[in-house]
Image 1 (cartoon, chains in turn purple, brown):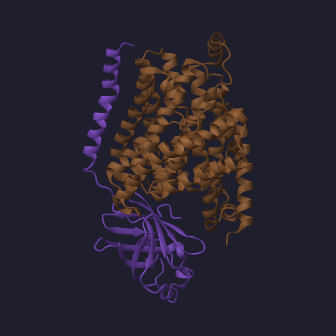
Image 2 (tube, chains in turn purple, orange; image 1 turned 45 degrees about the horizontal axis):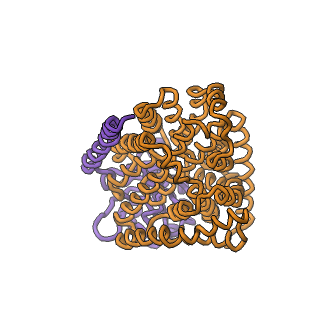
Length: 165
Length: 432
């Protein structure tokens, strides 16, 4: 291969893709991703008070950090810090986080038995002010008329625990 | 206090399953590393945890995984050192400008396609804690890596090491590896500087430059004595071997403390080691067996425990997974093939090179684990990328047989004469 041909090939096959890469990096700056909620979260309220509420079965044996969130874009996997490491699916839309079965949907299904941690429903707003990320919302048990929605506030402890470990 | 019985049970189960699956894969002409990678996935939530959740919780309780991780990290540190030791700078210089062109194109094309794919994946699988630039560069690096040891192993198994294609592939893979690790180091610095770093950026950059200078101009001349001792006496003393291990571990710890990752220090320590055939063979003989048979399967198992194919939920996510695989193959196989063709190779040889370069193997898993650790990729994207690594590694041998049948290779080898026993063949024999 002659030197001229080599230089031309190098410019075409290496130089052009490099320029393309710079273009991609430039255009991608305008993209936005869902807000980060992955990591471990501590409940600011007394955890034992939850276990003493009307929904003992659901909140028993959960200790701090109360839950961990594994995030992939807007999809969330919510893991309670109980011995069973109960996991629930969730999602985030803008700053609103929803986890577990919607109590309203569950009520329509005619279930009146108060379930365990797998029936926990969480609805919360993310507060981005301040140094730590905070969630403020309610915890309830899907399909359980005796369990009122319990207000809670949680603070993120460790944003790096993305895989829930 | 660690539960030692659980840890020992885990090690036993992992080694037994990896050996069995590796043997099964070898029956289908697959490199054994492919079977070991697959065994790791089988032991995780994708299969064992799904089909037998209680058994999985008994063998791999969440509280015990820290110890398994620690052992597997030791394995990958030693392995990266061996990859660095096996890297022969001569192979980078011997192949002239055409090889330089081919290797650079085989990096930049998949890198470009990986970054372009990031435009699609970033809003769907990332969060705002990672900037687009870091994510796109990571995707590019993950797409452009080649499993140098797997490639060497396949070439060695097929007796292709001495062929033109074999030596070109070795040279290109070596350039790819060095470039890939440099880019990944830059990405780690970039991502950690983005807010999560425990080490300030100036300390990382300044420390890294100082460390590189010390290793290249301070440690390397001293380490040459090991090469001389090995050449003259045929072996190293136990004290010298211990010192060598200390150098590797110290280098790994320093890069970790500088805000990079253990693997960079281990790789660098390997790169600066003497490159004499006797020394390289001696070091590989001393460390390879324990690393490959015991420690690396633990790394595959730990990777498998973090990978859940079930995270790839629904048709849309599987579609993204297929797109990732197609982009990976188009970039690496297609890019390398076009580059080799433009550099004067025939179609068959160019296709062979593209197929070989497309094998990602363990190197991809190391990169993906670094990405997951620093939070640049999400768990579901990690799972998709692991599937891509498995598929691209799996397809190498059958595709190579299709493009470069053994009967044709034998003809070429008989023309060249027997060149077995070369440096690269030695490298490929035991490493996965």
